[in-house]
Length: 312
Image (cartoon, rainbow, N blue to C red; front, side, top):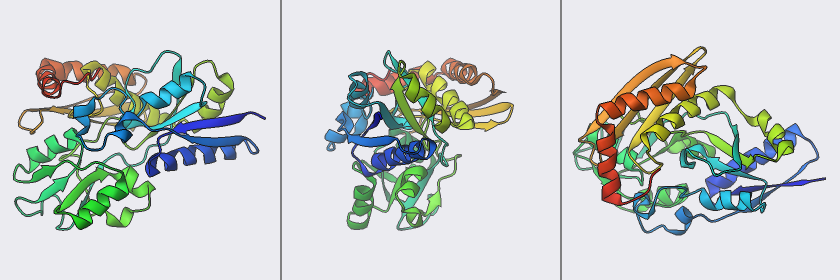
């Protein structure tokens, strides 16, 4: 019997996600053999710099996709927010799994985002979060915090920080839900494109595996995430650039809200648009073009020049 090898980053959260996929496959096809192959990515190896300063395209995915193309693994499991909007030739996004709540959360020593005293220090490595929080509370201090979830929580407990902003999905999946102080309102912080969803890539010619992975694909999540990724692709934004988006699927319709900001949140374009769920990519493109007409392209160009990264 064929053994299916899952490529994954070696972080605890990535391993959790890959193990979840493996468990689902074993449920669907009892008796199959599934193993995990841990792979270090560029983003995992460089922990002493801000993410945007070390590049953007495929920061946490390129090495996994290379292993997939070289047939060292049969599938690659990613957080959808890390996956570039253009996939390598020969690779298919075989499954977008059921999405967890996509928003950000505050883990705080001193109350919610509106209650934090002036000058409080918040840790995050996300330019998207920094821009939106500075827009909402310009009096707060933002500091760069890298590392896995447990490392960041430890830094909050032991260093001179008052709070962290994290993704709800990661903190819940690793069993730290009790540490959440507040769900950060979407009015304050729109999530990253695809945040909260797990994606599985496979080779386009591996029909046996593609058919198996169809059972993991969650239709409403695919529609919502596809809408957000279409917007990102048209904006030519990237995972580390201050772009946020949230698509809400409601049967026949999708509501998409998005924002583009500069690094301190002083310049921001935030817009929304609805469209038929039968055309998620079209809705993403239309909203992106409307935002570009309002000046989003100039904002993104400014951010790219500051960090000198290829975000396409």
